Length: 426
Ligand code: GLC
Image (tube, rainbow, N blue to C red):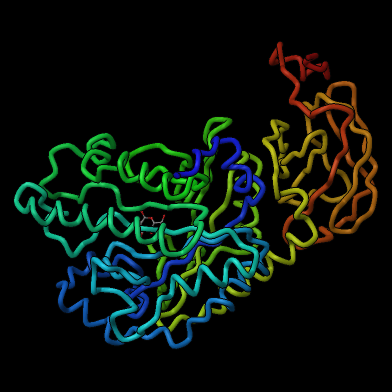
């Protein structure tokens, strides 16, 4: 008997607790070191591209190392490419020979990943690209209708395999549900794409296999999660969302040899905190080399995030939205009546936040463990004083503030009242 569907609020609980996940893009394209879109962007013929499978052995791919790095970064889940737009599967598939199991590697890398992630205490997500560039029907569905149909059938069969052969999967991360550029598509709306992929049927099957799974919004249907890409933008309250982002150049989810624009650790942390402040998650990508090794630039940054979360994790995991303003220095997260002020730009000995409509009872700097003096001025300004001149932590410093009630932002009934130092009484 199929299990009962699980209520959304219940299903999404772990995701809200997690706040931080690691995305992994790895596949044949990693060997070419020019990003995961290389086949299409360079118009590499399918047969020529397929030869890469003869060299893709993943000799250095170590799932336990990879999941260990993710867990050490403070991430609570991972999402790995089971198959990208090039159609090459990192898992065993009855409906395709273009897989790492049936070619040079002879390995089911997805099986290895799932096992290692579970061992490391991480939730497991599967990225799956609906589109497959090897099918002419993807580009010209009217001209090659049989090919288009085969591609859709392949997607249904493979999603079913992925959700049948690896135990309980926590998140299904679709991608590539859109129409090809400049091709023979008449209607490229989300509704038309959902019809093309038969997404309602597909997701119904997924939920029958796994009633607690979270499904993202990239099959043309909204489902459970919004997926802003390369930016952090909160969805409406109550709706789950997750910002995914590369560490380096935006076209480089897969390994790029010379990737000149790696974000700094403070930049990555600011994205993570901004997501957490909007009750959303941050899915940060790594793109291992063709042989499976994780590059130094990524390992170093992830270790630094882990060190920071070790000190400040309570301000991120399970965070709720906070409407308090960040003034000129940062952003807030919240947990019940506790507010966490994340200071991105350390102001020196005094820090000021305006329009705070709850009484602050006490404050503490998490990076030093020291109490912080806090006073509230009659016009709602919260003033922290006696702070160290220089930022005690080089990246982001967090002040935890315990309030007498859930902290809210003062409503400014008269938008000019602040000029006379009058509070906008709530
Ligand atoms: C995109 C890209 C892709 C990447 C993904 C991650 O839509 O096509 O290469 O996997 O976003 O969000």
